[in-house]
Length: 154
Length: 154
DNA sequence: TCTTGATAGTTACAAATGTAACTATCACAA
DNA sequence: TTGTGATAGTTACATTTGTAACTATCAAGA
Image (cartoon, rainbow over all chains, first blue to last red; front, side, top):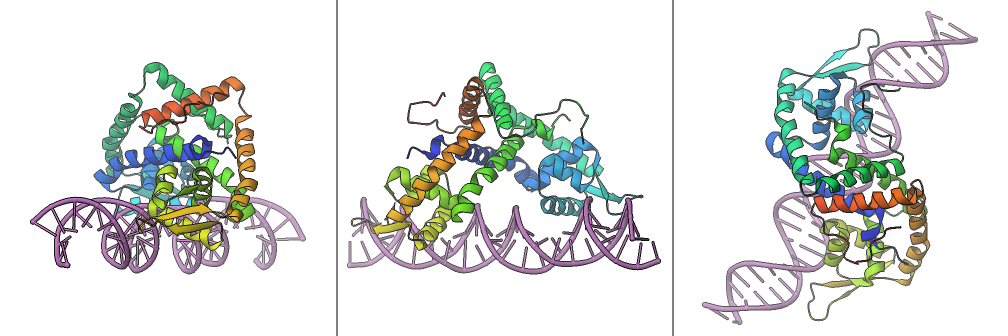
């Protein structure tokens, strides 16, 4: 039976993700005590401006209970504010407060710099190959490709 | 602030891994009720023949408590047996029982077939590129390359 | 022999997570 | 208007996980 775990796709993915997640999360955990879901809500809201919890979940690929808890926590920090929709009172429009935006502005460059630092271990050619491979992996797994424009087909 | 989550490396990794893990784990979960750690211990022991919990942890990149619990569960199923080392009684030598081997023999081909099915969504050239990208990602993250020399380039 | 420190493995406890049930609201039709 | 089913979001409960503490054992010296 030639199933060696180290050659097996889901295992390799899992290991790579665990390593990356551990390294990246240290930045926002040490500096702000943020959890992974909280960081993602922060980044998503920063990108979208205003969004409902459902939209955040779709955009960040998180389960709605995870989103709900992360939002509640960020709201307690006064980094996120909410406003009920006038027409449909089930919907809460969420957005970053100025404190939330400020935190993200301090955090984002560090995250990007660390990403750059990781990628700098590869030559420019290798880096392009790595990103190409990642895109192909997403294709194989049926994950929709990155959209370039703001347009979002619903 | 141009940090878009969908372009951000750790986020993309996490999403791809979650999708893959969910699809793959269905096979051994539905058929045998195995958890991810249990499946990994099974595969690792199948590859190594006999190993200590520590070796399983190193080989499968799992925390020792995860290994301990997975082993305990597999032992209750009578799929794993243990024998204390004669010279160092802290060490337990673990191995698959014949029932464990039998289960793995039924499971492994299905796992490999599913991996093949995923990869079949790519052309041979794309598949090679994807695996190349994955290897480069591991390099960037400082994960030791597959030692077994024979690189799997389709 | 009797420390001291290291190691293999297990377990207690707390934090994080998913499932399912829940509340509140809406749309729509009988 | 009232009933039915769908949806946004929250919460209760059980499972899973990691951290830290624990047991048992070993090795190497004083």
